[in-house]
Image (cartoon, rainbow, N blue to C red; front, side, top):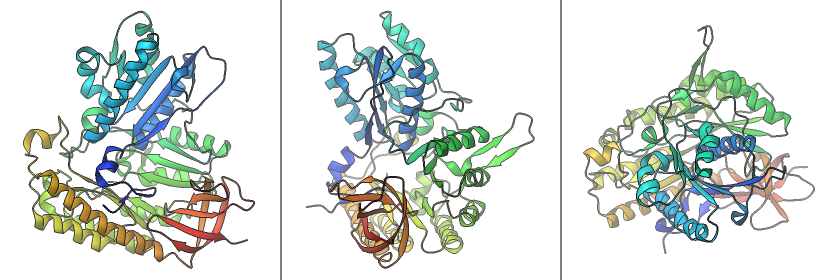
Length: 479
């Protein structure tokens, strides 16, 4: 029996194979009842950016006459917002499209579309060869959805996967899907200029562009007015955020944007994701230190602990640089600051000694959490074109398991250090296991379970941590 896999939210009891197959989270649209004539059902796969995009899509289609539904059988339009990061993610979506094809035979009027990262890469396969969908829309073409739907209504297939250098959807007020009413995502930039050799994002989401800083602050202010207590600023690489006003008088980098959002309200928790080791600055770290409501948690993907492999991955930093950034985090924010990471086992030509470098990096950093996977080649990437995927699958799995086992030990150690301390927890809702318990997170992004008592979702509660598991803290409220 394999040991459980870690992810950022909880310890997963599935084996590595099972968890890799389901590694992309899935969210489904909620029910809205405003009397609009048509029903939209969205399934969103993968990352927080996809979930944020689905909220933008829902807003655009709400104006075009669609309420959302969580019941697939009620849908006039079914959209799958897809992920191409790993092969298993695409396989999951393809299986779902086959299921939808069977439904469509019974309900030929139901329209099926694919959005997001799979759209650009597989448009020809999905539309023309396999004829699995009615429309294919890339992440920069969501404004065009109403006209594309009209084309399908008239009997045509429709596609727009053009990437943009300007589109940020800054003026769209997202409809919050699957929201707990406490936490919300705010997208601050789109695309990516980093050409990591294993990654499809630059090809599916286009070049990097930053959103107007004032629109980000306005969206966060509106969320506070609506009772939200936490925002997560999203970007493929938030540290490279840079916005300049049209007249050139105003320049805003990520540290400055982070400060502007933190100043909205001391009761608003501010998180961000994802940071790139080559770009995270001391200015960002000192801004985090300055404001208590900026969470002391950084997701800092390493991908590998070996400099040669990092060079093959085109990560543009080496092991020493990464360690120096971790040291800066510890020196400025303290040992208590939580750090999580991504790790890929079995990248092209990785030797046993280089795999050991990944393990020793985990020993050095002692991460709080990690996303861990074995390498799967993605068509169209630099690695697929230039490198040989030459590590046998059984070796990849064995190396991954060693990474998982080591990381589990450090996750437990980090959690054990919180026992006997008091943590400020923002309650998000009921525990998955009991209606008598509530769950929430501390500012290190650790899940905390407490007795319900008279507390409500959205409350801040000071909690004495009395115990822990590898993935969860348990505590008693301090009254």
